Image 1 (cartoon, helix red, strand yellow):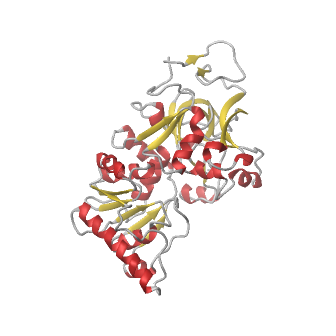
Image 2 (cartoon, rainbow, N blue to C red):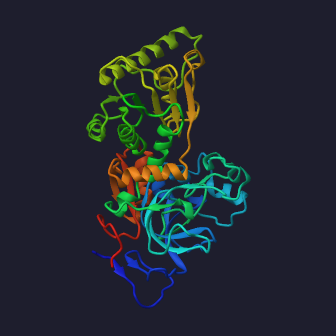
Length: 425
């Protein structure tokens, strides 16, 4: 087991990385990669390892010993302190912590459970979802989708005690069985992007993936896109991916994309916000670029058929093209705005061709379970990219910030080497 040591005897206040406490023993302190307001800025500088008190689970909460954690764009935002200072936002709601422990993906072992927890027990190996809500909220008790609840938050971003620490604190419904065939790092890297993509593609009836219908997927080589290609393929759809570099094309094809478009083709001159339709010259130039993109899409698809769904997350740079491209009665579904939040829509296309622009945010417990089963069944691969040590939390987010990531990145936390699938006996 490499450098891993199981501590069997004396109870300690804090355990070094590579030591494993006796199962169920909770030390007072833990190591965590922490953001503080005075360090807001580039992710490589914002995260620092500190000793922090281990949180105590409430009646419906679970304390998880983190083996590995996934990197997601939300903690790029947390590091920058923009567009939201998550520490200040929590303090306005009564939180006392002046720090942020990020991390919205994890694999690990249940270490302690609250008195009302029934679905997991100490020793269970789990993966974690990031959706949190108040189960006693009136809207949820009335049957509302928890993802639509006014109490909905993202663990490890809006809520503290995320996975970039030796122990993390979650609500009981966030725990799902770890796929036994996956390493800790692979198991830590897929739930946020995978479940987000699953809801985007399979929730918004009647605009869900159908047999033999094309789906256009922006950022096909990234975390979200790699999941979307596989989910579309598993549902019988035809994934067409968009990438930013030629060296990402083969990756998408291997995942099941029928074709791939490089958005940096010089024929595409139209990215960004839509020109005013009254500016004929600028608008015509934009249309020329959009039509060139459409022609390339038909070429790689092999037929003149527009996508039934466009899977969008860049936002400002792509929404005008997405609305232009999607078929009559089709849907553009978006979960982020990584290129900006001011996205323009030509309403003539939206209303006259009855297109749908749909926002989507993470996933329900049922959707997380459905995505997790696809992984367990081998139909969706985590697409694990680079794996960092615990001192590389900031570096992994810096790579994502600079658009250098391919696939999903992971951080080894208590797992001290790659390839391990379970705790030592």
